Amino acid sequence: MWLPSFSLEDKLAAITGATKGIGYAIAMAYAEAGADIIVIARTKDDVHQVVKEIEQLGRKAYPVVADVKDYQSIIDQIEALIPQEKSINILVNNAGMNIRSTALEVTEAEWETIVQTNMRSAFFLSQYAAKAMKDNQSGKIINISSVAGEVALRTGVVYGMTKSAIQQMTKNVALEWGPYNIHVNAIGPWYFPTSLTEELLKDESYVNDILRRTPMNRLGDVKELAGAAVFLASEASNYITGQTLFIDGGMTIYGF
Ligand SMILES: NC(=O)C1=CN([C@@H]2O[C@H](COP(=O)(O)OP(=O)(O)OC[C@H]3O[C@@H](n4cnc5c(N)ncnc54)[C@H](OP(=O)(O)O)[C@@H]3O)[C@@H](O)[C@H]2O)C=CC1
Ligand SMILES: C[C@H](O)[C@@H]1OC(=O)[C@H](O)[C@@H]1O
Figure 1 (cartoon, rainbow, N blue to C red):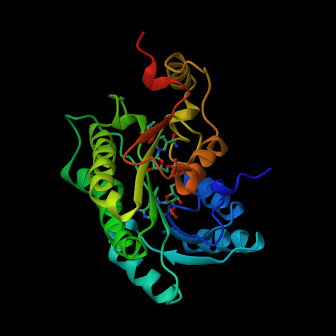
Figure 2: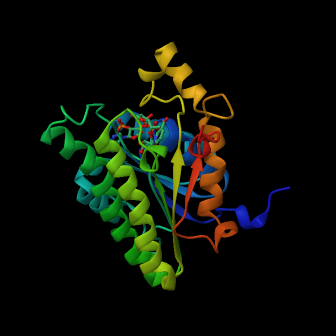
């Protein structure tokens, strides 16, 4: 039995990084829940492949091939692609990356790449989407943070700063946009096997370190995260805003 309040029927969702890993799992789950999807990523063939897969589910899908660092290109493509009568009901700021440098070694170029990808794009795409959501007096924004935004990880200070910023941005815009019935929440994952973490997770001792910090003693599966993303995009979460939901096997509550 499918709870009607979890349905995304007739919604239009824009998802950055929708062709791999967490973003792909969210895109497919949203399509299965009834949404049409704007598929956003840099690799054209991947974008068009995911568009095809979503159309095979009977939903509409719109390809946007762009780097989130050039968020204006994304906005321009969306404006050109989406029918006049439609607008974005759901925005998932998922695309993100990491350059794993120590605080003593990180360069300004690395800083700019991580900050523009993980943080600046999420803010200005949220600002764009929220203008239409305000007119509609309805909208859902889900930002993909990380446990790195909550606790210190050894995988890079700049990445952690951007994820903390994402969590703070989530609270601030939830405060400002609550009166417009726009709900803004974040998801904070621990380790999930994806192309972003592939190299790290090849190191057995590193994985053992992860498991020692994880009460559930295992990595996550992106399908386990997609359900929470559907919930936060649906009417079932209509009295939740400004929150970060950690999907982490218990990692963030592990004191000692
Ligand atoms: N996997 C994990 O363990 C964790 C992931 N996260 C966060 O989850 C999010 C997704 O990560 P994950 O699924 O693992 O990543 P992946 O690298 O597996 O997938 C990233 C997706 O984003 C796209 N992408 C990457 N950079 C850009 C860019 N500059 N512009 C547009 N699209 C881009 C990629 O496609 P393309 O290369 O074609 O652009 C791909 O679709 C990130 O924000 C990450 O920080 C947080 C905690 C843990
Ligand atoms: C769990 C963290 O987000 C983890 O840290 C990294 O450097 C990887 O990129 C993962 O995102």
